[in-house]
Image (cartoon, rainbow, N blue to C red):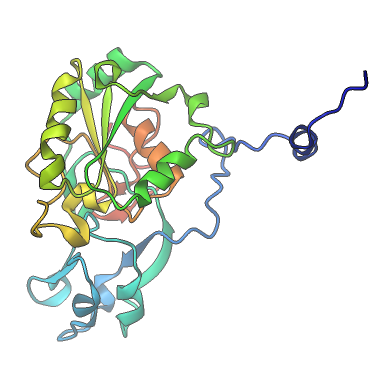
Length: 275
């Protein structure tokens, strides 16, 4: 009997290995990705409020005068680039800054001084407990499913999350990390807390997406609060609408101390970390 080889097998053999070597290599497969807009207060024009009026989620607000007249909170940014389009002076410019995971919420607010980090004891505990593996329980707390589409991409041949020793589990009883998406609607608040309480100690929480970090465009509305703010203790904040798969991987590896934090005081500082 003559045997045949499926076409998808032939295609795979011809294409070769699809998984990117990142984070082991330099290529992260995010070439041309549009990330968080960069802010240069020196180019900000006194009396101008075009960016404030254009910012739907309220990530840019007026707070004073001079270079400190604007408050820029990337934890509320949905990466719509409206501030870039509206700014007449180039104070806001487009960038490829996608690795915006941080350990402290304050680091998502633009400032000249970086936030302090006194989590040395937590860092040692993370290293002791996890080593190089991590099990995740994901809870959708009212997401639009944009973040879920990026989470699903983590399992494709390009990203292949399992190669890093990171796995999703269907039960919170076997999870190390509770990964939350969505603005935490009132209807899903109780299931969210139930999942957290079912997790064994030590347990950690990651807010993925601007909605989970701050509520996003829906924060404080009739059906939800402001994301995980005031709900659960958060260990990693990752804004974005949605954050791309590489940003999610970077944030997960940050938690287990296998990659550095790149953002301090709302600014990308490549390779910087406060470990």
